[in-house]
Length: 198
Image (tube, rainbow, N blue to C red; front, side, top):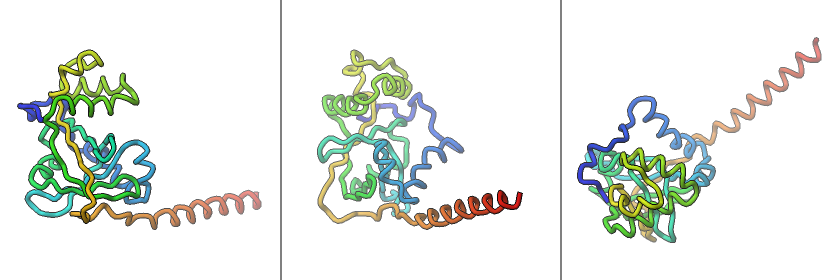
């Protein structure tokens, strides 16, 4: 659900270095490490820019339940990716090496919102309670969550068998790995040669 006053969310909106850090998983996907990030439940959501019409890639934590994928916006309706999917709900989702088409829907049913939040909490309840408490500036526990679940901005992505509406993020930096391997081997060889001269 989208909180009525989502622009006033207590979690500060990321800018500068923090924004860059939150976008760092995109680099990992481009390096071909998407499967690693997928084990951490981080996907790449590709939306169509509502003004530019261009693909916009966003890394975001998710939880999956069957063909449904749930996302939580820590900043309500403010993020560009959220506004983009409101304007055009057809999106592309990358989870590791898997790229699929999906349709985005804002969760408005309180029971579904509660189930989605429980999916996030399941692996580390204490950690997620602390994060969720910070997002809405309320104390979140298993007892208070049923009354608070409607304050979170939750998006459901329904995976479809449609053609991809947008291109996914390319793995265009995999060439870096052979270069790093060659550089590492060169340094080892150099160290061995120096060791023989000594």
